[in-house]
Length: 394
Figure 1: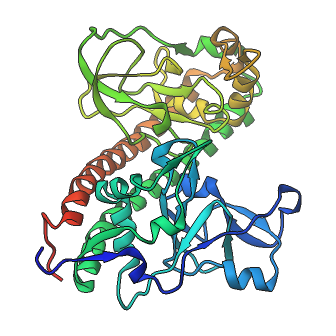
Figure 2 (figure 1 turned 180 degrees about the horizontal axis):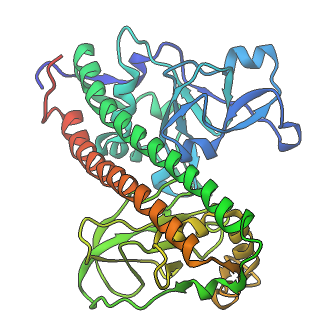
């Protein structure tokens, strides 16, 4: 690391840090794309395909507060301390501005690599350094004046680019696998609607409890170390979520391979949080919050049926109608949810669906397991590369 130099962050700026625009909700709906806090905390890489609000902007505002490819964005505020200073990188070309709770950082690419700096701030080194400038008042926050004065050890520019290339290659592969799974899931959702909603006219009437078992019994001894899944790891676009880690079982919801997890609590339910559990070992038991609803098909129906049902719009609307509680967070009344009216498919349709599920789930599972492996490799390499413990030849 002898050729790594301690540099003040601002020495690599092409222009000074800038806060974004304030646009009230009443004027939003048309105009230029605007990156808000939602996008910062929802995405690490923001592209032209990232959904976001449109806002009217003047030519002057667009000139001063637009984003260029490779601009870095930092969250000025967060409800939790760990979120203050959260970084994202902009990889878009459409006219885009950013809101006032964000700080834009534009790097001089002749002196530093924006991708390297992005990974630096995602690493334990970067997060730890940012934590030293976080101020806690009503919410946790950072100031641009403090951010620009942070000091880091930087390798020469060619090595910065080489390090960023290694990490971005892993992220690109992870992103490709995620997109493959999203395509397969979209196809599954379309076929599920066609088979079990649009073409179900002459089938026998029933309720979902006739087909699905809710919160089936699972045994896990207290103190057993088993895979644990935080509710925050679930999303509306992930077959098998990231974020598993080993933890001693105390009390909570237990699940096995092929179980579908549905968020029971608001606002996670409205956000469409679901998961299909995929473990490397068939006999593995995992666990998590009591705010999960576990769904498992009965009889000969493939376990993927519960996952497809949980992602179906009509079922989710009904689940939201089962929310109970007068204040704070509401929870789904499972006994109410069990009465969701559904058509009972014939044995022939079940057989056809099972064949489809058998054709799609191995690819979904394989992609999910590859994602887990690549993410573990990336997260292991990240601090080693940023500290110089592992070197990359430029």
